[in-house]
Image (cartoon, rainbow, N blue to C red; front, top):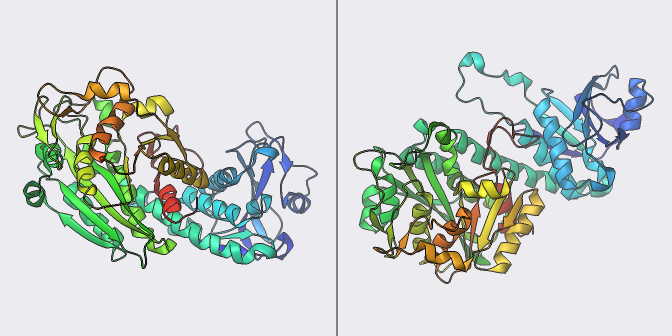
Length: 492
């Protein structure tokens, strides 16, 4: 991780640095520090090129003769009157992604000199600079000496104490999101259910209680849906239970995560292109695991129980078949019309288990439906729920960390499409369209009277190279991690 520091100093007082990052607004209007930099570079105005005009996501790297710093990076913030903390986070992400400098100084936070802006810059730079090289050969590894070692964020002396605290929290949030990414980006052959359970155990490492339940325990205790989803694989399913217990908790929350370590579709087999990226179908479980592992560092006073259902959805002679009827943890019978609608089966068991915990709220997180991507694209997540206050709190927490959650309705008229002639429910709700909504309606049947919310992160959890940007990389993004930490830490 990059060492993050808040420094109360002007540009003329900074220590020697390899790179200076300075903000520029749209139409090449210089931001804080730009005049000093231009004077040092012998320029009269901010340079403009066909690819740099100060728009969001743009950057321009300049060599400097000033002895204090070797290079200058100008990063775009867009219109001056539209700059907010997310713009600062994105600009810092651009800087983090495109630098190989070891010591970096930035004036970005001086655009809006508040602890919140400092936190955004620190998060963006750290997340933008993270790269995944674990599985490359030694020849493909990046030279460790090219990694950024330290980022100094220049701030006014009046906010130095608050900025220092904000940077410490930013480090926790960024570390948590990167931990989620690392779990998601792990190849599917190396994180089959038992292996992923072991990796999660290593991640929490004493920071919260953990118990791993094997296939025999699951069968004995009635987890019929989770067991059925994993029946086609030679790697049997697991349930991971996490428990964070702060002193004098204010309330108890249950967090549930879908953990399909690879989703082939089962006997309802996906096409080849539909399987690409399916190593990320456990992003919900990865998110909850990382949140639970980092709650103590945020001083959260919310007791959290995490339930992670891990399974590999594979075709074989023992696999779940279309037409089978499975019995969920709460006794509900489900006719399986599509074995590729398996995530909701796993969550049905987890919701039944969570209903016994007397939690004040239940939130599930899952890469659940392609319909959520069709409706909202890859940069937004869907949220549904039975409690307006809970849903609104999650949406606000998303706004705090720069993530968008768009509420979809639980349209009651669609509920009848989940009825089955042979069981209590079917698992698809096919008929009316709105697949993300009918999936939410299916889950609501297992939420009972709880204050419950469902997060469908199928779009933003995993991005292609074309969709990656600023602090969101190609592959696992860790979307949802910082939002849940913000919500559980009372930052909304």
